[in-house]
Length: 218
Image (cartoon, rainbow, N blue to C red):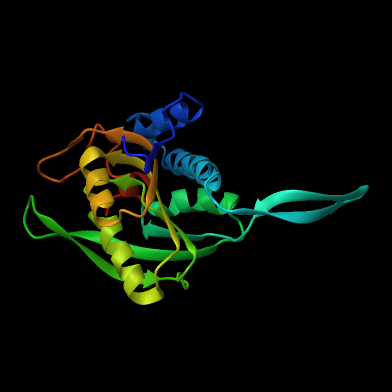
């Protein structure tokens, strides 16, 4: 595995239970629980990414004295691909509660029963030039939504100094595509699955359509 890809379930932890519940067809029927589990994963991904950020010594005054602590040198920018990215984004925002935020609406436009392209219809983005970007997309299937959204950002709000990509489940094919087009990014995921369905390019075994499970069918 590339050193730019971080599989945070490589060592077993409580995250395994959350990921199992996200995949479980019986538990998926509870939308609120599904969204809550996506938020949990967002918090855990944010914690892992926080270890790769820049820190600086800052003074903290307690009731009994003053000490120096390593605190974030700057806040990252969180950008999520809607709509499935929203619960994961909430988890990130609980951890990076002072971060600037952006949103991109990207969707699959089907040109036939089995063929589609990705379209970006809307974006609301802060200035990114020279900043640290965390781009959030729960399901990295083909990887094309992330790549197209990132190109939209570069075109409209500048080039970040550092790029992190966060996903819940990725396919091997999707990761390869993202790495080929955004080689500067570090990618953090909780699971890597081998296959995509031939017809709709869904991840197998995956968990289904994260947006539909979180918010209802389109």
